Amino acid sequence: MPVRRPASRSRRSPMTAARLVARSVGGIETIVAGEILRSGLGSVTHIGRREVRFAPPPAPADMTGLRTPDDVFVVAARIPDIGRGKDALGALRALASGPGCAAALRARAAYGGPERAHGVEVSASFTGKRNFSRYDVEDEVGAALSAALGLPYHSRRQGEPPPPGYSGWRVTLDGETAALMARIAERPLHRRAYKREGVPGTLHPPVAAAMVHLAAPTDGELVVDPFCGAGTLAAEAARPGVRVRGYDLDPRALAAARANTAGMPSVRLERADAARLPLADGSADVVLANPPWGEQVAARGRVAARPGAWWAELRRVLRGRAVVLLPDPAELRTAIGHGLVPVHLRHVSLSGIHPHIAVLGPGRPALRPRHRAGRGA
Image 1 (spheres, rainbow, N blue to C red):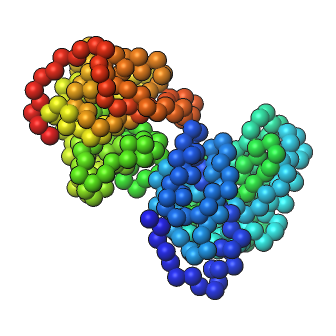
Image 2: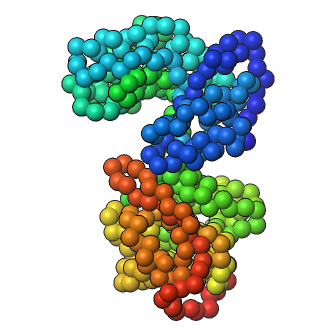
Image 3: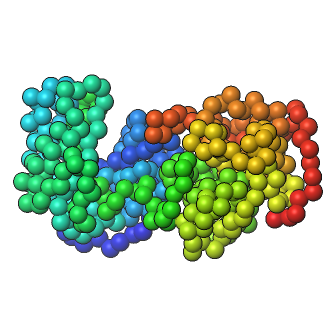
């Protein structure tokens, strides 16, 4: 739920005309929009590729608790896209010339961000081929912002992180519009505070949050992650009243998961083979899974010897719904053969790869998997 704050007269002026943008992983934009609406954080005005635009409520509200966006920004200015030519870069200075940048900085605090900024840093992206680099865009806009706000500018060109307290700004050129936006939070929302440790193949937290949203666990339910890795799905599913159990064969992954879920009493982690879980038949209300498909992480144990074995085990323990990240929807043939019925399929774009999120429920198996007595939840 949004955190409401008393509105002062000084904070009302930027709020009335503020426009916000939630940046998103491609494919989960409607999930992001749904979270904004359910949380009472505004009215959605546009859903586009990798972004959701929305108008905030009249009273101040904390936007930094949103789970499915990569980040949330206040729009400072928009102008027509400058085109491909490097000689047109100077036109981007107009983005920082009006009152919108100072207003965006003031609005950040009303939406849960820092009260002050000690400097500015800029990230840029554009569609199509251009005769300039993103660093050229960043430095052009960064210099103009620095002059307009009276704050030092940190260039990302050398790959060095900005000093603490610098406000993050984003420039996008989509072929029609050039937009300048101020990040609300001090750091991108996808950088979770709990994520102290990582392992190869670790899941992007907003994608994990979207999978939890599709699974919709409720009070009293048991959520199971048979390939918990660094514990991202377990951490995103953790909440009062929901029991979360994570399993992995890799001791290093379990150590990372334990570090990342420390202080989450609803999460319990254990070393186990995903094809032989210590659970009774039909005991899992929800299964969340990002299996090792041999691209970034090699399978282990019984799954390495017989890749379809974990589908049979999933069907054995499942009584509710499963949400699985798949590299290829062709994998659903094996799932269907083991008695799992797809009810939803969503294509996502993530760091240059294009997996699918599948939601499945129990059905009648076409292949009869071996059943065995579990040891209980």
